[in-house]
Length: 276
Image (cartoon, rainbow, N blue to C red; front, side, top):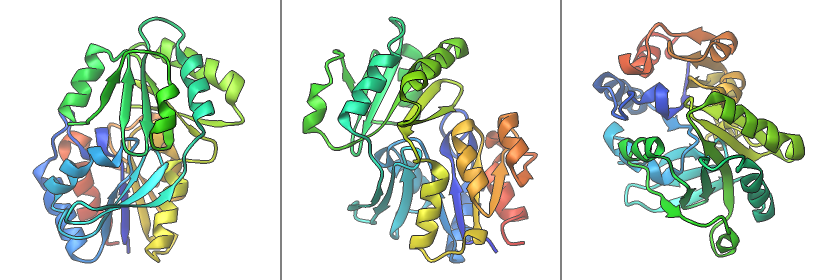
């Protein structure tokens, strides 16, 4: 029986507009009331997930979030206190070099995630709307001088946003050609190219949380839709792809749902598969 569900947020749990289907809320509450753990496993900061936890009714007890594509596990208490349980950060020098290499043309939108903040350089109008819909807090920066990072919390990941997949691929190639031994590359949401430290991904850290909770890996499930979910899909006892997932994710999943994120796919999994 599944005791821990690790779920991606965007295009998996959340509707396209960033809202949550009521069926998902009802199913998740029932699952957790019966002793299960439902844990967001996201590329985002844990600070951007508090509204989601509240909407799901998961803010009344100690709740876990896996953030930054596996960069951290954070426990959040009902009173808002936060505890960093696991942390996998990168050096400032590595973050700066990733940033520099990714500036292949003038319209590159760049995110720098520290442990507690998101800084965005050259934010695009589409990305600004995306952040607003999902209520993601960020600080806009207007200079490519990153020396300010020495006074911030550790850097967790660096990502780039662009609407053109060819541009995203060129960024990926440019960065990995120099830093392949130091970074892990993933793509997400059909808009982002993401870089974490080598060896850090949603699967590794998701199973770290299972160990912390004393849950057998066979009793874990991971739900996702995009390429940055591949690691958790492969690592979990049961890997689940929503119907709108990329084909590469469907190909490695144990279960491919017929419901999309907009059709309450998470509820579909919980109600029809999690207890078997």
